Length: 262
Image (tube, rainbow, N blue to C red; front, side, top):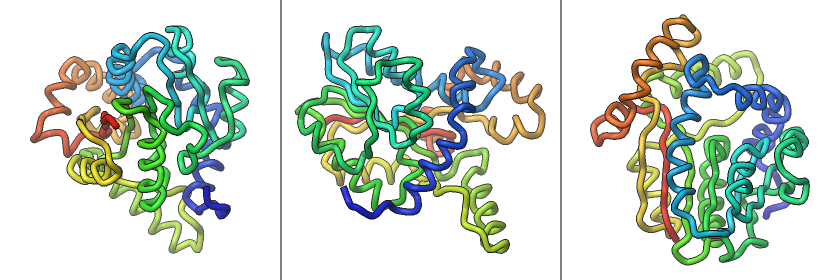
């Protein structure tokens, strides 16, 4: 791992320290419809659970950016051997409410030397979106090296052309910050289904799948009218596979989910 921490990584840590309790509250609720965060996570969780259900008994798993340990707790309960790395001190404190302290350590996806070819399953949920292009390249290669031959990687990314216009919103926020002489709040790395496939293939992954999730612009709708967004979410959720994960619609979904093997 390089000694110099990039601006994007430092800002990601700072922002997650500041918002750790908010993340914890989001995870505490089981209502997937009254929050765009929980709606998106519900869809991500379904895809993640399908992959986890295929793991061999006692599989070794690594949670990159493990946050409050919610996913780790589920895997531990299912009998898997799970370790997590989380660079945010506040997130690590909250993780102790869900998993043993020995299971979570400070760490970065840019240095997984301790896990070389030892993991059956490595997952990074909402991690690479905060890292710049260079760190994405390094991080993917590190994950590949942490996996056993045939091991599975699961990761989520922000779609460049999502219907909610998040990329345009970020651009406007950054422009405003620049005009005010301030730094952006944090970096956002965007992908498309094709660019993500190319990135993972270049890192050495094979059997690459890219799926879409959260088609409706719920992040915007929740800001305009939470009640309307909740109503629309209840209608779209049963249709998500059709709405988000077809060749023609996947480029416009809010989330991209990558599943690949070493």
